[in-house]
Figure 1 (tube, helix red, strand yellow):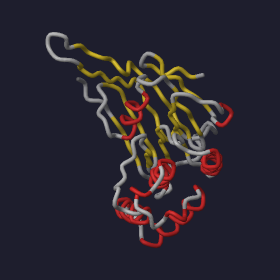
Figure 2 (cartoon, rainbow, N blue to C red):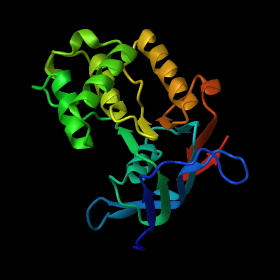
Figure 3 (tube, rainbow, N blue to C red):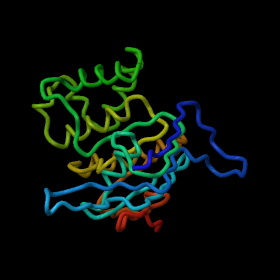
Figure 4 (cartoon, rainbow, N blue to C red):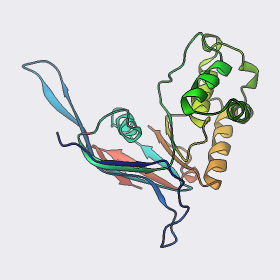
Length: 232
């Protein structure tokens, strides 16, 4: 397989380009990914991504939609560097946050302890962690569970914590894989209030889902079909 090139910058992101358009903060071109399934003699090659393209600009909310098994999560993992691609190029500009569909939480740690642990991994100071954590508790409405262990949380509250950990360092680019699965209606509305606030502040969000009911909440939407992205 051909090694795919990638460029990443954590420097500050210019708000606009020379032509007056918002700057591109995430660009993917010609992304391919294949897997080999089965055992001999019934082994076969499965092409999941077949040249997918995607672009995310500063101050945008972009959706990536596709049926289950279409390759959405594979694309997301490649974008964040958690999975190698076979071919294609990726360019990122600015700090990246990622909320995976399957949360990585520790059952015997409390919500507060998760924020402390992830804050150290992000290189945040104690005061930065406390300030960001308290804001996240209020925004998503689960401050009363701050001292509860993950094993004591409902699925919806664990989903809030999963999202909150991605928000903790206030990343320029936020990639969310099925972020509102398990949210009740109040939390769903809080989520969209939060995304609008981030977009208005010049932050960028890529949200993937197998269906989208509120298209007007997005600036642009890509459909993932047969391994390729198709702009709506």
